[in-house]
Length: 353
Image 1 (cartoon, one colour):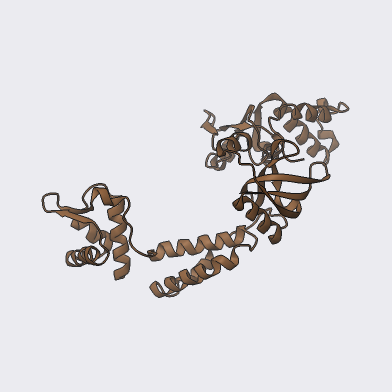
Image 2 (cartoon, rainbow, N blue to C red):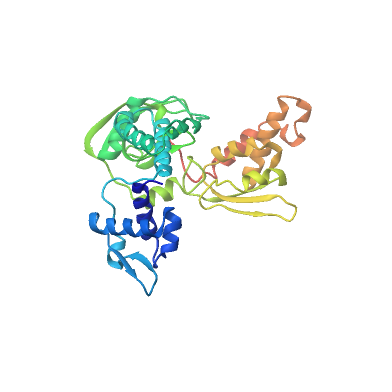
């Protein structure tokens, strides 16, 4: 650790500690001798006006209580590990946004890389070992992202053409943008739709010809946005009116037990090793996709309509390979269609049509 790194490390230790820090601990944290620790403390007091207090009786050093929270070292101070982490974050930002901020973050990236190279020669190249893979990213339109994000941040209304996947219809929308959400490798716009007098979620890849309007956007509180758009499972949000109960096999439980499907989920292991997951459910479309990908490794316990829908879809899938596998009760004409129509009635929210 170089001299500058030790100054930063000492500052970090004193900021985090609410009690006197012993000289022995500082020597260990800074990887240096007692004499060096004392020289650094004196330098910080003289050159950086650091409010470092000390006491022979307490046997340590600390930041004065009234100054500890607000005191910061001048300039940008990072140790090599934090610089590498910052570089990785910049790479992540470059991957998830479609080139809009590249021009603005490029100088910061170059500066961080230069500092990192001066501290630890060669470590900068190790960033290439961190990969971000887009698994299901749809078409990115930088010009759309730029206009929409500007409207969100400037708090102006936005108008655009929207081509909905659900019904394949195009419509002109006039909205008050609220926030951008990056979810499962794709961008979405949470907005107040003025024609429908309701909150809607729009996929950015389906927005065309966006234009910022001079009118100020209507502001919706974060609490309401979370309540109406984030209460249920996934991006197909709405007021969660049901609790989905899923039970995974003991083998699959080793993965699912460590996953977060929803901030308010509850999970427990059953006596036979299976894992039971409970989570709020508003719109069933997305949770159904996740249920189906686990195939025989998950059982939908409730609600009843979601359970029957899962059984119906799995039977349809099996029938494509061997019609004899179609369960007897699903051979009735219109069974699946009827179940899907019933399922619509349990949806607590509406996505953007």
